[in-house]
Length: 569
Length: 65
Image 1: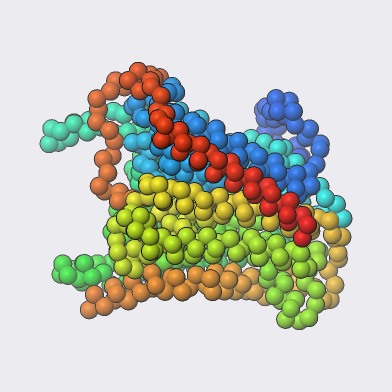
Image 2: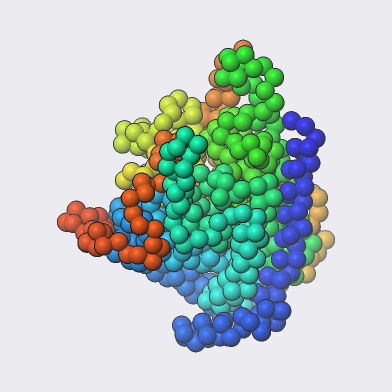
């Protein structure tokens, strides 16, 4: 641990927020249907899309219509992607002759990419054809992220509405967000990554001779384009098995900084856009502050764990002054860049990794897992982070209202029993799926077969897997072999629950709030732009997450931490 | 990111194929549908698509809250 590491963490997070701010202002214009500087190029494409699919851009939807559109779109995407993956051996652009995926792997992968999770039970370079990567997975990287952002736009409009029911049009929000936001930032980032050495090739492999004279096959793939949307869309699914630890996905510290900032910038930007649409700019800044505090604290905790925890294996080897735990980390990134990435990716439903979380010291891995269990809201996945933290904000003002005996309000909307019921239905999905599936997997032989480690680390692998799936994160504790019917099926169900059983009550909240009158703040209104509110919201997020998951974490990473301390003596 | 023991997997398949990116490999032009996999396909498609139908039904239930 040294000052340069701390400076790197602070700089990365500060740069991310700084990138998100102008993006948020631009996104608000896109969601409001206003003219942007991209209109001359993209307006005709947008009009063509509406004409092709028969969309009336002026026709609004209530919350039920909006939810139905999002569900139908995702269901059709699931079926098409499933069939594409199952029969990729019959389709073109398959230079390596990869076979079709097994049914359970196709189910898991299709759900994974439709739900913006990008959990991968397969090694990309040894499984997926070019067509599957480009016309299947990458397409869903865009549209699943667009779906999340569209729902965030609907939630933002519900606060601006005064006794209405119009939340916007899902098809318009999806189209505009994908065309005007996700596509441009991904194209620019992909070009920058190509310039920085990331390959972009349809040629699948090249052969090289090693110094020993052996032949080595080096996979290339259209990596840069997928890498860009992988980060901006908080998807996380990489071309290569080891994700952004691979030198082709993330070759230098510069590409590492570009990718790390891309993971969270849109999430911060979404909060800024929310503030503009909901006419609550100061309150949106409070949400950004909560996000920065929690992701910063997580990065600091992981960095401290990786540099301060004694390492039994190093001590046994006679090395007592090892500066940090480098197992599973890339030398070109080191502990600070690995720690801040881990905090950003697990706080964002991204799931890409530049270091192996399963190789972190126990508390470092535990913090990464805890970030996912908080609900992927600090700063959160694109769109999903915003509507997730708004749900928490509603719970925070509700708790505060109970304490002072007043009807709680948030951004000019009274928060009543109906909204709190919906909020609890949303947040309870996480423990139900994570703890429920983990409990079953911890005793079921067919599930335990996939574990590489036993003991507390084995429990951490199980907990992390279901946390990652339910939180739509997609990262994994290496060590769990998940490409088996049990894991692929149950993780797929967890991904569906974490995404869509959350979205439905969130849109119900939006519909309920939209129908209420917009109230002016009174003397009894709790200011939701104050440091007090920031502290309250941080507390609610931590307590809710802590109470639900602390007992399970105590049996996994926390007990493993003390085992490490005992072994290091 | 990928699950599984990362250092025990071969990084890529052996180089026994021509490097033509547009090629659809003839040896694989066969149906990969057997009786068992067809049944599994139906099961997983019903599980996935049925889940979305259930989420839709869930939304209609919430409307009555």
